[in-house]
Image 1 (cartoon, rainbow, N blue to C red):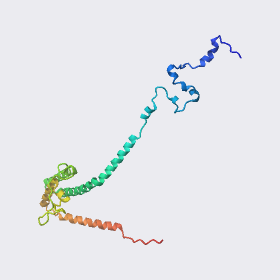
Image 2: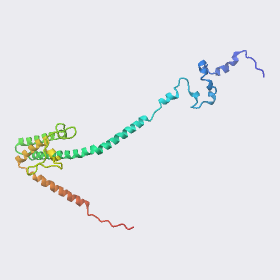
Image 3: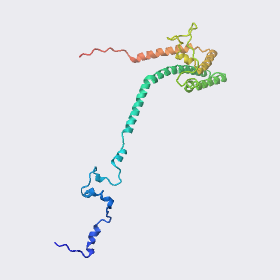
Image 4: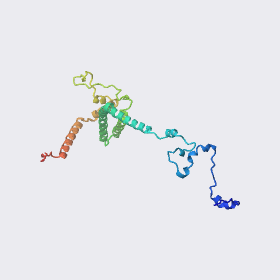
Length: 254
């Protein structure tokens, strides 16, 4: 078989047209990088093969620096766990004790304020049909003023309470019938929550208004105590009736 030279290039046109138009000719700088890429177009290269790393790509150490870390997640978890543990410990030592004391004291003050407003509302309702319209208007005005001054924001505002929850007004211990003051276990004056509520400046102010209305209209305040006792006994009777008779359980037969 003899290879004959081709004198006419036109015979090569079909082959030339099928060749790729852009042929990359490696320069001298690419010779070192292409030594291991001789058969890459045939066999391919594994992902971990060094031949897959192109020129100018970041090194493995630089890529590891940008890899997502577990530190932010662990930091968030530890922060949340520490916050919950702190709240639990603080609740047992201080929050629960403060809630118990504040709830009882707030209930005593709120009870006094409710009784004052309730009695003034009763007087205003009774005077609504009075012949003298000025009396009804004055009673209604007293109710509105009492509601405004005896609201929670006023009763427990900074004018009467310190930042640590203690009162900043004078409170005297309860006086016995013989004129002496009750003493605590340590010999000091025993101040109760009822004493703190009675000494509240707003409670003192409106208690005087209520006492004046009671004296003016001859209101018997003992009636309210009797009604309250009757309601309490009636509630106990209803609860006992709803409970039904108690049934004794027979022992189990095994």
